[in-house]
Length: 121
Image (tube, rainbow, N blue to C red):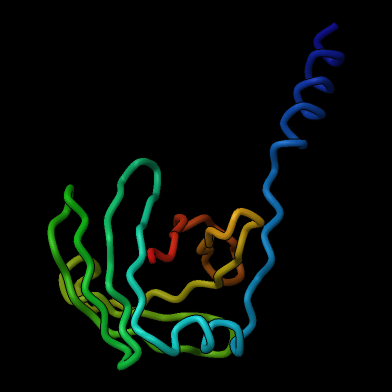
């Protein structure tokens, strides 16, 4: 009985998994060729950022405050250095797009989920 319930849960939850298409370096570069406003969300912590074509950004996360930094591309990864939040430590991520048009960030190699973002109009 327990196995049957476990199997049913696997079937039900596997249908909910989102298909993520990972972006290449060229796709990332095309996405960031112009200034962008984005909304961020990770585990209910939300915020907004301006990601600029000059490779600078500023972000506001109500629970944490405001910060600025720089970003750059390394192969198929986008890397950033936040002035305050990450204390000048580099963070790189691979980015995937979901069918609904939102994006997901993951740590390279391990694939740990970093959060989702949406490009605002």
